[in-house]
Image (tube, rainbow, N blue to C red):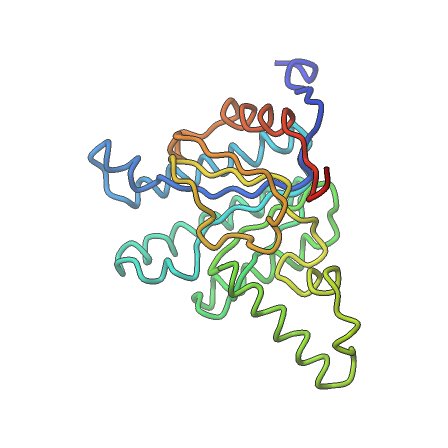
Length: 241
């Protein structure tokens, strides 16, 4: 298929899409497979979605890979996810080789040393790329993100580096895990659930929300285009008239 056939025209495209990748377990259960196989299939859907976003021209994407609450899942499932994350990092290295910046949102401390070191190395080695930024939210929670920013600002204030009255939305946003990335324009959640589940709470204040019944492993470019068509049809007023 030629480049012209791949090109998608929309009246408006989001700069930043956040993906809540829900339904891996249900996808596996419907097929009589262990949940780990659902997560593996979900990883394949993530790779395809990144490729589709690159082709369409979305500069920032964030995937909710592992929340701060996911540690409560059965130990065997968490262990399987940690093994799968190592494979994610192999793919992330390929994305970096395609001149995409890789960032990990959340506290890396609880992860195994090997995983944590690779995450840090990937961030460092891809920091110079600007054509696309891929953010993986791992051990991430929206409330934790806000607390993280508040603590950073409190430390700066205690050192006399910033006055409390000088803290505004832009300053606060810059202290979040997402840093200088723009706020999310569109949040897509798969599997039919209709909630944010503690994902990008600050950054999605004015985001358009799109919910699909499609389970994440079945999410593909066709589903992405449906979400983009819905986004393009909406009027974003940001609190105005």
